[in-house]
Image 1 (spheres, rainbow, N blue to C red):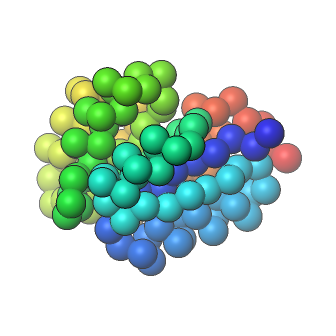
Image 2: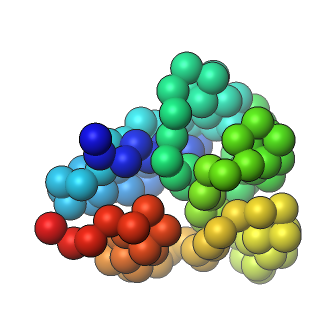
Length: 124
């Protein structure tokens, strides 16, 4: 069974780029959510092996989502991403239990490499 990843970002373009890149690898399944509220609803119905979340979003931000996951599913790895002009949000996400953080924009190969490392999936 392929690892299932939840990609959470309020920008549909970003969600799509991340999802398509990971799907192209062939080793992952991806679901998408536009904000933390949608992500929680999906997480209540599905198990995710990894969550990739933006931090600054309307209708429940990434920090709130990380807090929810740390309470409801503390073993689920989380990657925080942000385009914020400083790294305060990303440092906060790491302190709350995110395993990785990426400042947007970043090379998609870096994302794939980090996903493979955390999930223990070797390149095909």
